[in-house]
Image 1 (cartoon, one colour):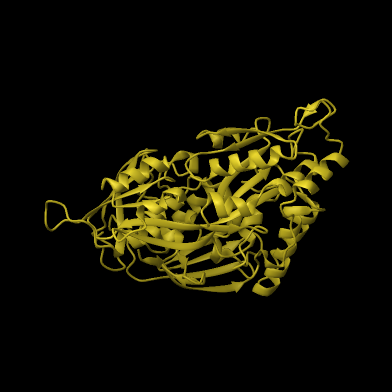
Image 2 (cartoon, rainbow, N blue to C red; image 1 turned 180 degrees about the vertical axis):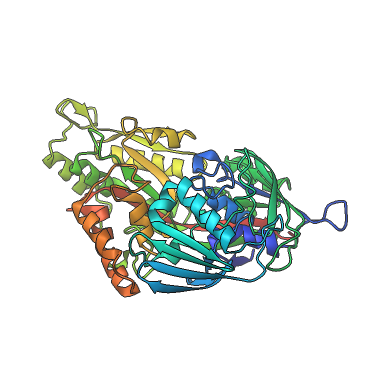
Length: 495
């Protein structure tokens, strides 16, 4: 078995542009079949339209779209569609595009096309609109000038988020969510939760495209994905359960991997009659055995989390203090808050309310059900009854705060390489993904401070305070970041 490293968000670009695929019966045609557990509606990737929830990840992963800037292996900003940028003043950014960039339909990707794409993005995508704070966009030949409504030191980082894939808005978005991008592949057919068919972009502007046709199959069940790879029905797999890895640790397959900022993350519902109690939130944080989850259930393919970011970042968790696994301490916290087991059934109650935790999660991220079962077992030891709802309808249910207490998901906390993204997306009153309806006056004030800092060391320092309060304000968790994931894909050796 050999290992390779590459950016997790560019997995498909490695597959799409750089692989040598299995030949079909036609000797001059190369095809590739890719199985993916995450290309589905429950992961908010119903299609490849980057302006639709989190579908930008699929757009960029499968080589259809590209952003103005992207990240190197060391998470440094580097040009992609754009050639360079200039920060004219605190509200004004001038971006110069590379010459010769064209969409797959042959239209030039010039300043006007970029302007149209970004204007449509902020009109259609709530999270992007909140991140970018665009006031006006002007196009002049191959340059774009963006004015923001407030200082945005991380604007270039935000434009590198997958939602920032530049698409041809004159061509529009098809009814099934197909867009025209500048990437090496063109989508010809898409069926949500089933597949997307891709063909080589004959107009690709940035090098040779080695594979003629790619089929991405949605295979949300991990065991089915493993069997398909074993049987040769697919050439590569992404999102496979870690428990299946030993089946492929031989000379017939190649693993590609990288450490990421994707975390298994549990939101606390502040409108729940149970998890609105700070003692319950703190006890949950103390009652989840993150070390055992990583070492046993993840087979070591990850590491326990402290704070919202891994310690490989300058603003990571290495300088933070959080609750460790302490079941005896958790019991004491609950006892002092009046949660006691008065009837001897092993489950605590208070004022007639049983300490029942409705744990919402979804199955296509293969380890999330395992996390739910692990938490169910360890939290029962401290007197909590965890009721698991593992469903592909998670995105509907999480929007109704009366239906859940804890929502566990897999999320990338720093996709732009900048710490502000997580907090503006998840922890503020205006955040599009503040699922638990958390509020903190201190965090709101800190966010105003971070917007005025452009030096990395100052932003990192403020973000340490952000994390410490956002995760454990006054010692009471508003979320529990359980573990970081080592992303891996598995490919046939001869593919």
